View 1 (spheres, rainbow, N blue to C red):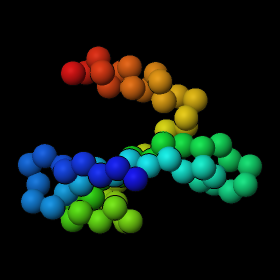
View 2: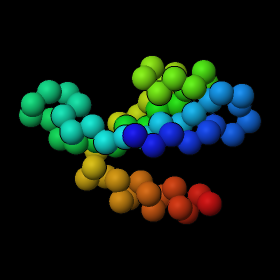
View 3: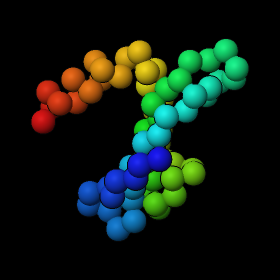
Length: 66
């Protein structure tokens, strides 16, 4: 897991990890991105699961935002 300090917060973090079988044995891997204002990567306030097959396109879109 990677954690990144969340800008403009005292303890907030962004946590990023890969989950191999997020929804059971037959499910495909996802990139999980969570945000915790309290700094707890185990129980984020918000999270999103991005299928690995979509990751390249999502990264390109994020790069374009910069």
